[in-house]
Length: 141
Image 1 (cartoon, rainbow, N blue to C red):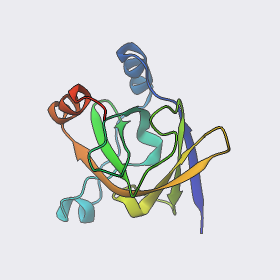
Image 2 (cartoon, rainbow, N blue to C red):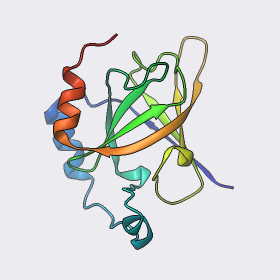
Image 3 (cartoon, helix red, strand yellow):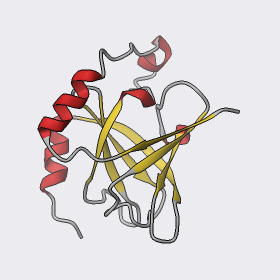
Image 4 (cartoon, rainbow, N blue to C red):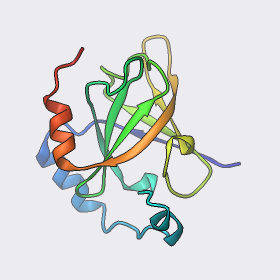
């Protein structure tokens, strides 16, 4: 079994996001099976940033991952993920080759003062720009 690990630092400003995404090229088309099932999938190589957002479920942590030029995906962990709220970098530990379509496809690796922590991902779903802005506007609890 091949595992891919990919470290990513957050994109701090829109200008940086635009310059990084301009280098990313065009997005690969989704396979017909994912489209037929209503899933939205992406390749790990298309990821270009992340932002912490207020948690959507009590007891779990959430981040929004930027993919390509304008797509955003909400990643929600099974439970608390230590240091995710303050991390300046995260890694993705992908299970096998191919696309990321749901939480079973990837774990988050978050560096911390006592070493990296593995956080199991419960759910991955594509979100709209309006939903992303609404999440960012919510106060953290």
